[in-house]
Length: 140
Image (cartoon, rainbow, N blue to C red; front, side, top):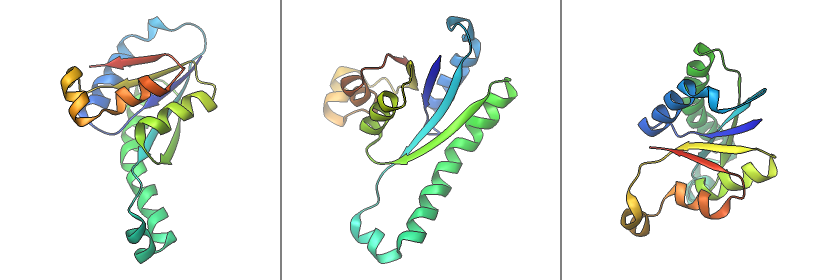
């Protein structure tokens, strides 16, 4: 089973990881985890001002800040994880990656704003649910 873990380094990611490691019996067979973090795109003027190398370095550093603790946590729980970082709109990118990568499930934390909060503020989880054909497990 291929599972995509959408992570952003927040307390909601930590709750999701804690839930995952205590409920592994939900899954059968070999499980292949991939942790994905998505960095928001820098404004075009900022990218042009600092140059491609600086921008690429920034994206790599920001991804590492999120992915390294996730990798360490899962490794402590004897789970192997691949890592992946992308740049773009988080909700759309998670959904596209899940579909193009042939994942069986997406697991992600959710802030749980509720319907009104999501309507007013938008939500990565809402975008993933709206655009993803892969089953999604939201952990609050």
